[in-house]
Amino acid sequence: MKTAVVAVLGGLLTLAGIALLVLPGPGFVLVAVGLAVLATRFSWAKKPLDYAKDKAQQGVEEVAQSLWRAAGAVLAALVLVALGVLALAGVDLPFVNAFTAVVLILSGLFLVGTVVFARRQEKLEQARAHRPAGARGTAGAYRAASHGD
Image 1: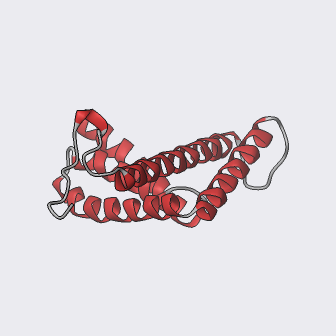
Image 2 (image 1 turned 60 degrees about the vertical axis):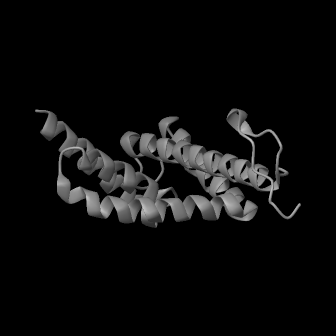
């Protein structure tokens, strides 16, 4: 029974991620999540998982390093959420039913979460890179001063 649940859940997440490769949303992130679920029970999913994780990381890094990309992604996410809310409120949108409206809202929220995560990670990396040698860092660690100083 566990294997069937893992197969269905992982398959649905992977398919949703594949759909988001052409739709606005973090496609490779969701593909990686789906493959990670599948890899818990199926060894064949481990190789494509490595590829999807690399692609997801590249996408997160691109959003993190570019304020314009982050703004564009948030704008796309807000459009997705707005379309989903409008459909649930009774506005007749082509090709959108209650299920797709919920998927639009969840995709938009997931995209916003991914952008927020990416931007925070980038700020942490920048703070670490600009911290002077010998300064107190996170977790009580000290960076070693270079010998030439």
